[in-house]
Length: 154
Image 1: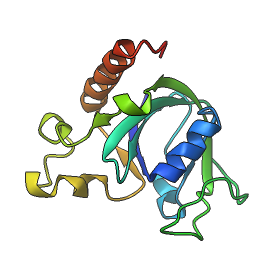
Image 2: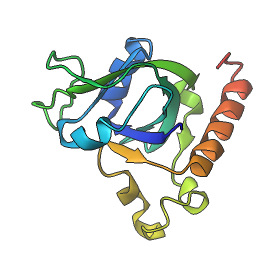
Image 3: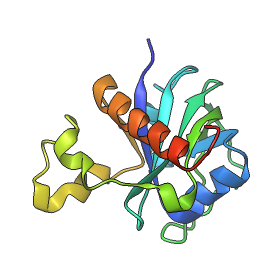
């Protein structure tokens, strides 16, 4: 059964994943238990902090393994290695000018309803979130439409 996840990270972390061709994703050391629940076939949506936008969706292709080689850097937490890593493949990657603002999804997503509208960004605290299939399907549909409008093949 496919699980659906939102990966939260800063622009520099997302850019590294993009430069890797969406072939690899790391999860923070504080997310070991959740990261070990990610399995091949699961879908990841990327939320970029600072921008407060959704930028891409990828499918997990390998089990999560622990590695300590530095790949991703985080200026706010320079010692973070993102040691729990999985192979991924791109599903939908939006050009930066087509990234989707996350705020309007607060009212549309089921999983964000426990946070008040005024503090909607609290839903995106932490590096990894399991989300309901319906919420993910809504986001994926909008991302595919944005990609099509941009003339992107994905």
